[in-house]
Image 1 (tube, rainbow, N blue to C red):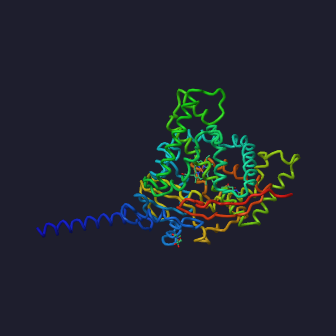
Image 2: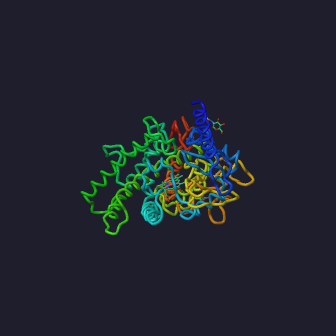
Image 3: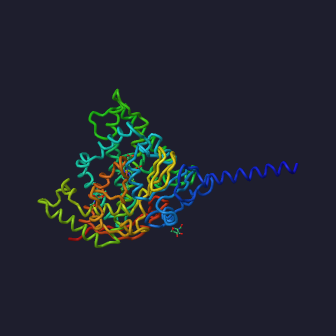
Length: 474
Ligand code: HEM
Ligand SMILES: *[C@@H]1O[C@H](CO)[C@@H](O)[C@H](O)[C@H]1NC(C)=O
Ligand SMILES: *[C@@H]1O[C@H](CO)[C@@H](O)[C@H](O)[C@H]1NC(C)=O
């Protein structure tokens, strides 16, 4: 008996050792980047999701960059992943979309955003959807949207100033949600019996979080929210079908029209997933950006001073002072755009952009095996100051020197890059610029409470950012 048990015991140990060895040393026809694959199955998932109050790049990335250099391997939620913080590799990956690399997101994302969300679509269908979105958030629509954004900003700021203290994170999220929900589905939060936005709460936390679907986790909350929001959207679509409206006035009407065309490629499921993504993507990211901007401006009075001067000068140049922001005025807000760029660069709202290698890639001596995932992260500029000149202090003036000859900065990827560059960039810029215009010309604000940043690794203000807003006396 004894030899048999002994024999199996040894076999088991050998099997486990080989498994462990293979996990730690994945097969590759070349040199894999350095890095640790962590524990079998779990990989380094727990370290990746561990919250940290660091205000810049996630410490998970920073620590490994220090140890292994700008390109390293790891394993997250059961998948081998190459992390790139190398500006050249990042650029290459973005340019190779659809060829060597393809947009790919972890299952947590596809569960929450739907299997047919824009980020998971490729080729023809992707281009079709992107055109639909650009129809709504492209320059022509934004020109028309300018007065609406200004009115919403003024209305909200006036209300906040009478309230005394407001949580900027929460209040700007509501403001932007109302604005986009109106454009998309003519939703009016004050008139609707159901609260649509409630379902999007805890989303950033849930998206980039440990994918454990049990009550109490952020991921679970997120999935529940999706279910409810999707049901509401579905009902609305059904209602529209039964009672078609004469004039097309929102994005839903446009979607319905597309759905009814005979040669259409659009399906109801794809359209609903798209609605859902747009509702979420528009308010959560932009409100985080506005909150970050207000926080940076409190900490940097000289920036606030120059920003205020730019906007006061715009008003001074007008014939009628309160005639409203024109498109030309908007385009002229040069320093404001520097402030916005610097804000989104430092806020690092989307800490990683995911891709999958469609074939084996060789880059700077390393091999990325076919099928592996890649997480593209902004270069951690301060770790190698001779190579990257972008440090981690808030300095909008630096943007004058930062733009390359082709009008972009290789180290700046807050909105992604290449073909999949964020379609909401211009919308965000309009929102932020017009809001800041109304804010700095008429109001002053003081930080009262909160404003602390937490990264999980997505950006969060767990205690909000409470400020006291009051009208400026002239
Ligand atoms: C500060 C604000 C924002 C930031 C930092 C941001 C960031 C990003 C990033 C990094 C990507 C690239 C993802 C990838 O390459 O896989 C992206 C894509 C996208 N963004 Fe934004 N975004 C912002 C605002 C918005 C807004 C306001 C909207 C909605 C109108 C929006 C809608 C989208 C959509 C639909 C995509 C997918 C595009 C594609 O796959 O081609 N974003 N965003
Ligand atoms: C946050 O990250 C820093 C830098 O890597 C580390 O020293 C610190 O222990 C981390 N804090 C927590 C709470 O994990
Ligand atoms: C902001 O960044 C974008 C993208 O890199 C760039 O095209 C633009 O010129 C920048 N704006 C300013 C004012 O520096």
